[in-house]
Image 1 (tube, helix red, strand yellow):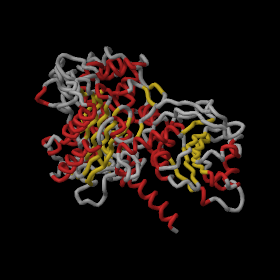
Image 2 (cartoon, rainbow, N blue to C red; image 1 turned 90 degrees about the vertical axis):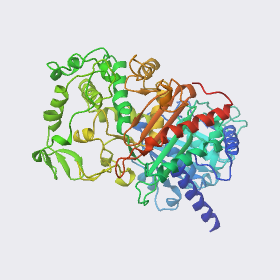
Image 3 (tube, rainbow, N blue to C red; image 1 turned 30 degrees about the vertical axis):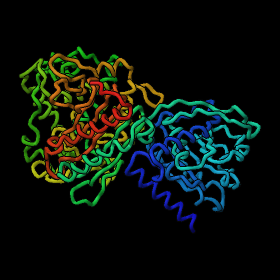
Image 4 (tube, rainbow, N blue to C red; image 1 turned 120 degrees about the vertical axis):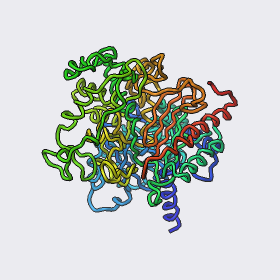
Length: 611
């Protein structure tokens, strides 16, 4: 009974940590103690049977993964880290041991092409477990995470699947092995003794780190105590009703060192914010979807920054948009007005409370727009809108609305499908995409405004931006939803100058071009916002370096990458719930939290700021 109670406590602890903090470490460990334990785990972890380079796992978009455990006591910690990289379904193998007949566990895991099996020496003493492991499964990718003294390795002599062997059994070694499987940590050791005919002294495979690691601030030389002001500022925002809740993530040197959720979905305090909650990213869509699609197309030579709208959009050729260059759109220097009228132009015959062949565009709950409304009304308004300030910087949502149409014309694919297939799924971004209400429970999605003017409902899973809403939730300027961890993955890839998980998504020069300052009349890159050279603005942070790029979002979002500090900073909130407020900006919540991070870095390295 005491053993079962202890295991339950471990499961509950790891679950709490997964939801509320960056790294599932035992609370009694201090930051440096965790780092020391992690180093010990590294020295005791060996990768076997990896001649085919199956570890780290690749092509995450093609994998369906089941994690199977039997008696291993640190399963919760192990699985929590696996879930940082890809969606994992956990199976308790003990529920199958002793069942009549063979293959019941095989049957229940038939829909998964990758099986990660956690083993102990006690498990390997069970003939049913050994049989499950050693049976030939030509259609499955099998990965074994073995935690023990090595005495059971001889029973795996006939196994050719990768084995991550750890002679330490602790929560930290569990997390180390889980991260090693995905490349969050490198495996650096070989066997120091002979265990069997196959697994002899010197056997082992060395890997390199290819994905984000999840650890503590001390891992990168930062004292965790120097980040406590993040808590204070976040709670200040909530106390002043600048936002009901928020999630903050900090990654330095490719390592997530801080990830915490604060507050609640709404001010009634019924549903706490969680790390895995999905937020409306608003204008961060511009760089996280439209811009990266454009980057890929220009890199492939299918789109030219110096070609014009008319080159790709025949309907634009007889309008004043014909000779606007793609580069001008991406720099917000095309002379476009900020936006067109949206819901103000709707007529009663344009909308319905029920879907049908005539009213097929879903705008919100019980709100449907007539088919082709965008083509017949909004697209015409975009093409016929005035050009007032060409050559000057004027931020315009229309720029990315045009870019969506151009990108879709080139790819012959909807923008949402293109970025999902080419970026989000391969990168392991589990929750990011357009139209989240179609894929996830509403309870997982953070609500935004209680819209009493346009949609007359609380916007929960439906995009806040009215232009994107009338496009059915998929637009170039807004419509993307996502989590902090997903965004950290995407922007770590960009910080890496195009590579992640062993795959190259962009050439380094493509990333350098798009994120660099482009014009004498603004601070902007191509699609990306950047550090503001006007010191009094302290944008995006008074301590950010001139190399910083990213974007903010109207719903209370901030995503910033600073290559000078090898830093990714994510801030997610729903400051527009239940109504729009400017307090998040007036209190400088986002930049002040960012400043805390820079100050902690400065204290850790005892060095001056770089700007």
